[in-house]
Image (cartoon, rainbow, N blue to C red):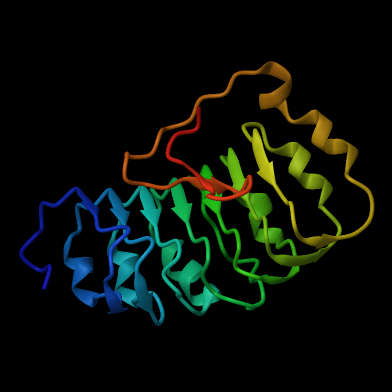
Length: 211
């Protein structure tokens, strides 16, 4: 029961052995800015009440065996201040949503790797104008890499590796302004927030800061 923690700002419960569904009572923590539930044995779907966490800026649900990616994204888009979102190793073998109404205006980091997601890259990503860091690696995504990725003014990290894309690499990727100008700045996550993992043999390397 989290209903008494109304002034809680940061909660890190990652890398434990918690199991069962994500508790509904977390939505009482209206002041939460950073929440890490990653690397647990949680399951089920994201509670609908998560849309009330209006202060949330950083959220890690990676490696928690969540299901229903469409419902998850529809809920989290109500968290208007969300800037970092980690969803790696969830939604196994689901279809990547193509809901054009999805909107994440302040999202700068999205990690949606190793989910075995199917389908083409979704158009709603093109409206994440503040995107700087995008990892869609180790899925079953197909189709072409959209040329509109070159229009992101702040994008500097893009990982499409280990998918099933076809066609040419769009020339527009050479127009990414953050790489041309070299002016890269990003809000670093809290220390307990695993940003991404690079697999260079065993064991894998976990990164918790951009630099």
